[in-house]
Length: 375
Ligand SMILES: *Cc1c(COP(=O)(O)O)cnc(C)c1O
Image (cartoon, rainbow, N blue to C red):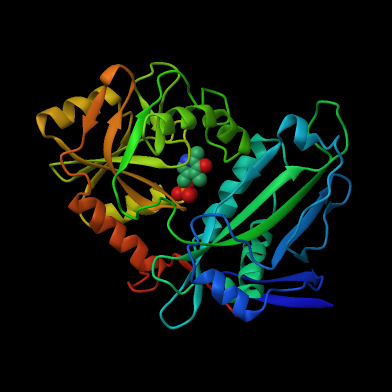
């Protein structure tokens, strides 16, 4: 069976055909039961997944909608040895009128190709990336939660899929999208985060993969995350490998500081940090609200001094999964501690309400960020 899905985009009309393999979907009652429970983040998965194979000789093959399930892999598959893998995180939101919209998938499609280039994986045409996200959301629309603050988290990813132990970029790759109905990323909702300042580990360096969304960056960050958990924190703050004072990011979220003179400070995109879609959206919103946003080198010393003098009032982390999470503390080895004067500040809340309002369809989408999904 071939199902055609047509996507309206302002500048062009793209038709992508999917080969659909019938699945054995959960019953409506089972889905309803799962959606009204404690979803957490990334624990439940929908009935289907999208798969597109790429081969060096022939390029991208026919996109498929497959039943969600395990993928058989040869033990000599290159990805298991050399980690040639990239991913994305995108959300689909249920609006009060029942419609479903995906937030800025074209930005993720563009970033995916930047990551692909860096990891020597094939670039995926952006319309194919967007069509895959839309198709999965449409096929599994029953799984888009209605509960306030909940959404369908889409996880597109690509990996080397070649049985070969020689060290070179793969001649065969596979792109997959899976979807997970999700609640709050952090337990406890808007409770301010406690960050751990990593002084033993860095996540990126000049010429490395810091700007790419690749599994390898996460693998390198996990030991520091364990250290953070052991110290009662939920996240790690990484600094620059060069001076160990310039702020990079959290390893999965970008960071903003808020001053008492209507400024937002955030580390510039220096090649070592990931260009978050949430970060980019917040910068636009903040400027529209009349704040000055400085994208520049920001240091931990400046943060500590700013809190001491009263100049820095709030701090928050941002990313697709948690959207905006206020920061209460930054602590580190040898009793290092910064306590934010406003652990869940007014500016943080105001920006969070605007961006989540747009995502959930309760505030006007003035900037054309939402991508409607035909159900
Ligand atoms: C995904 C990610 C972010 C946040 O990016 P969003 O597009 O806002 O979700 C920040 N840092 C890293 C390392 C990431 O992988």
